[in-house]
Each structure stands twice: as C-alpha cells, then as structure tokens.
Length: 87
Image 1: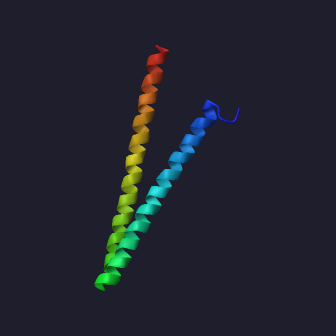
Image 2: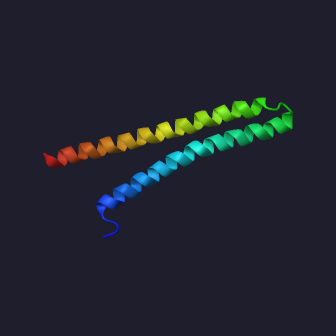
C-alpha cells in the first residue's frame, strides 16, 4: 500500500519542511524586491535594499518559528491524545 499511515506521516513531514523553506526564501525575496524598487524610486541606493532585505530575513525566520510552534503544539496534542487512549 502506497498511502498507509506511516507513509502519510512522512509525506506530511516533507510537506511541512517544504513550506518552511518556502516561507524563509519568500520573505527574503519580497524584502529584497521591495527595497530594490523603493531605492530606484527614491534614489537612495543601496540603503533601502539593505534595510528591507534585513526585514525580509527577519520575517522569514519569524514565519519559520511560528510554524515550528504550530507543529510542536500539534504533536503535543497528539501525544496527549495517545496517552489518554492507552489508559
């Protein structure tokens, strides 16, 4: 069976890891793009690019941190549910 419970959990973990990576990269890209175009508009090269790049990096890590907290909460609830089923 291709989609048994064990494989399903592995695919879910792979999907979560992919989303976390995309969140980090997308934050950096969006921050860089915003800074770059604001620099072109205000002619302040390279300051706004650097500032918004740092903001993008911070936002990407913040999203990853939130996702990890959500995963940990989900696993804690699953462990608590499993403990009550065993008793």
